[in-house]
Image 1 (cartoon, rainbow, N blue to C red):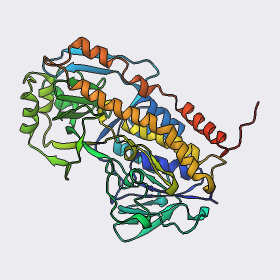
Image 2 (image 1 turned 45 degrees about the vertical axis):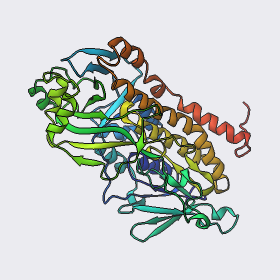
Image 3 (image 1 turned 60 degrees about the vertical axis):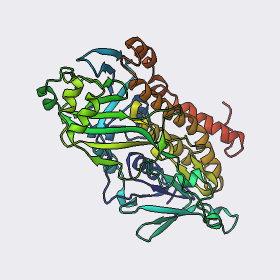
Image 4 (image 1 turned 135 degrees about the horizontal axis):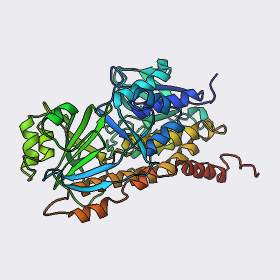
Length: 451
């Protein structure tokens, strides 16, 4: 028997969508997941989970399953090394961490396998690309609360609550940016604005066997910790996965920047991912003064058949993560798709899931107060998510301004010191308590009994 009088539809079966579905289903809430792809899989390769992401997964009850699919029996320390892209092995800054700053590198596919392995996948539906959401107002009764999802195969599904976990290209986001977009009475002549913008950066991605990297003459040991090679308008991030056997490489080329939060431009036409010649990749960095004998260029020469990814972001940051009146909420990149320079995006998605699921599974949550619950989620998560979004863009500006015409080593050390602290050391429990207290103050929840 269902524990709640409302139903949930999650659009998107990526890392955040499946974790959210697991947490809700475990609590007895009727939830279904709709994934556009023919199978579950994540775009990209390795992902580095920060300490806050690890704590969120633990709170959601899935950390042990994720660890079982990783190369580590427990979270590990993740210090970060910043080096020059111009000269061989010149260290700019060694970002130290405390014993509490334990994260987890894992392949995205392994993460999904872990969640699928502990979930009832009967609630999941593949080949379901959501193309529209519509709310048709019939009456003022609670039973009318919610929206209908329409899919490209001609089918539809109605739920009281729609959770958009459909990533940076989110279809659901526009129904939050424009609250009337899904109203049948106002559906004509609506714009399709989703705050999606090109960041001005492109990324070349690859997975390299460490044996190949060593054979190429790269002297820095990339198996120990994440490394960032810095320069003007260029930087490279590496981190080890599969116990250091594989090096995840992401090489960034920034073509423009302005005074906005991210330096974002209009969304680029598709496709966002295009194969390129290795020569293009190497020349992109060498023409900016990166020496042929540097570890960075040696690393890039190892990347066979690279692809160029146009990095997009949510800009400007959303003014709300919910359309509470229509029963729509956003999580993960759909809410705050951010630049990857702090490695914080998926962790923020997991924090979204923690707050939203704990509010939805609260004993006093029901269909009649669901609108208040969504507003409480938004109040708790939006300031935090948008702050990390902007901090991630700031990190990108720092790592692409190093060199003769930019920041010195001392400038870099000053600007990088403690930059992960607000992300890693946030008290998520306090956010949830504040959300609960606001619901009590509004008499949505009963006042807590005094001890």
